[in-house]
Length: 239
Image (cartoon, rainbow, N blue to C red; front, side, top):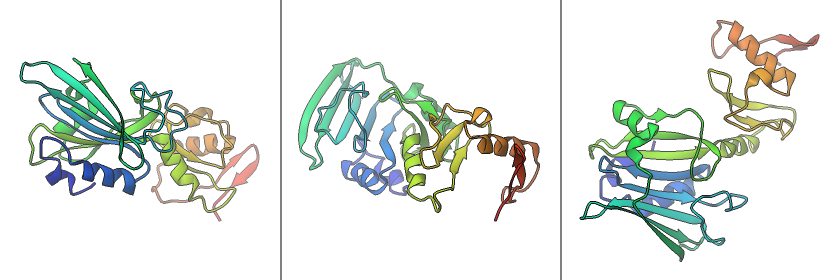
């Protein structure tokens, strides 16, 4: 967790240099933001690596690489949402403004969970409203700014891509799944067409993965123990 978030997030708006640093240093991050107990919200989103901007409900210009979203309450009590879009050179290529936005960070599960916890909280996979893709959120309250919560969104397909780049063998399958068997990320050479965050290992198209998960559930063994099991007469064992 970036230590700078506890000091730099305490101002009225997260310093954009800090947000840029996070998005550039960790390319699998989709967005970083802070929500406050008065409903204010400041967010920076990375549009790099997205195949198309058409799925984004905030309609960025085609040459936008970064979107900055700022929601704040005006002196008259009304709320305003401002979007600023920048190209890869951080030049402004578009702006948009909306009165009385419906988004309120205080109503989001990540905000509520973070305020109740002293630890970093991680949400289950869910579909983001801004992009209609599945991801997870990591959130933590800002200790020196009561009512402020710092969050990071990570798209699950970004985790799969990160794992795919690090597969140690063409036949290796790397996967992350929840305790309910929901697939979080998968790197298998693109042989299994699944949607991360929605597919279940109980019905995995690959019978080895499905049987692996059933065997794992049936065993009460240490997490680091190597498993040996069979699928349709074929023995699967560690080497």
